Amino acid sequence: MGERKVAIQVTELDKVYKLYDKPSDRMKEALGFSKKKKYKEHHALSKVDLTVYQGETVGIIGTNGSGKSTILKIITGVLNPSAGEVAVNGRISALLELGAGFNQEYNGIENIYLNGTMIGFSEKEIDEKMDAILEFADIGDYVYQPVKTYSSGMFVRLAFAVAINIEPEILIVDEALSVGDVFFQAKCYHKFEEFKKMGKTILFVSHDLSSISKYCDRVVLLNQGVKLGEGSPKEMIDVYKQVLVGQYEIHEEEGGGLLDDGEVAAAAAAKAGMNPELLEYGTGVAKIVEYYITDDKGIRTTAVIKEQEFTIHMKVDFAEDVPAPIFAFTIKNIKGTEITGTNTMVEKAFLEPVKAGEKKEAVFTQKMSLQGGEYLLSLGVTGYERDKFQVYHRLYDVLNITVISDKDTVGFYDMGTKAAVYDRKE
Image 1 (spheres, rainbow, N blue to C red):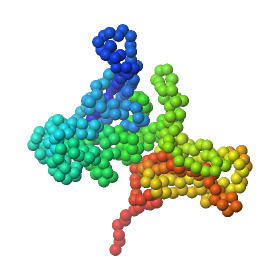
Image 2 (cartoon, one colour):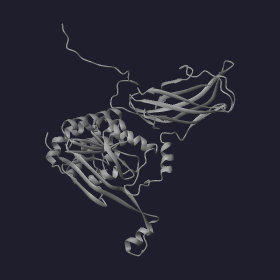
Image 3 (cartoon, rainbow, N blue to C red):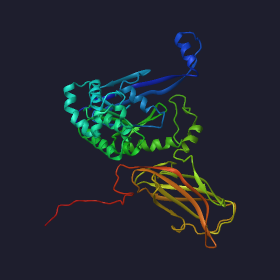
Image 4 (cartoon, helix red, strand yellow):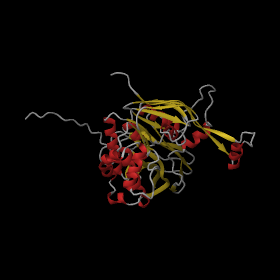
């Protein structure tokens, strides 16, 4: 097999920003008038090490503000580090600030030449790639119009087409694949696959855990500028889910104290996925006081890996006697179509009266068979009183569920098909 060649080597990387209370403090310090330190230091990155080998696809995940984009900008030379070293072997194409080098007054063709020469190609080399770029961008005659007349979608398509068709040795992507329509995204991912097969190196940051799970050989998890770990996509997504809900304690190497205020972080993270503009109604006879989802390990989460078991929890307080309450949930897609749902009456799980003051918890456990994507959960407590249907409490779209999948079939759900192909004996 031979020794693997290093494409990107990051060693002990630090990035510190000085945060001033007011602009005049920055000026005073710059002019040497201030004896006292008038700024707070914010560590965007602290002693981060990262090795990416040639031909690898490595993902970087973490919450907002964890330092993901900062590390990519330092690797691509957009930002300078405060300390540490970066070594890159190979020509980089970065899909970071897409179209950052575009001139708004120039037309599309002129911008392709401008961008290509900035990256280091000759006019002849750009001529050779022009057809591939135009075909990929697929913006028709708009390519002869000034870029300032483009819609944001066209702008991104052209910028992406230039960046991805110049045959880099190392491709660096920051959330760029979430742009354009679904067909354009499919085209981008197809190009991704081609790059992998050609043995190119890819480093990419994404909030889309399905893409991370599907394309990455290895994943690095950052949290508040610190590298928490690296490993297989599944391992790191599991740890990331714990970070999201504040159940993963991050300790400093020496002091052992939490890097952040643990209680504040946990409280903020526990609300992840909750809808701030909640729609609810009901008679108030019963009240849903708490609800959450746990994964197959019992960890609270709003991200569920396809094919794994997960449980919906609903805690309900009863203010009055109820002859036969029904606990229910519904899952919709983001367009509002009801995809699936059930209740305790259908499941024959609970058919008893409840007294005033009682507290119940309804749990629904099932295997996740929905396709990768975003969904919304609604909950309800209803019942029949003298054949009249009553809604005691209903909460619409209370939680956003993210399904992480590396295999999506057609339609809303996966039937768990087992497929095989055999040689026919005629």
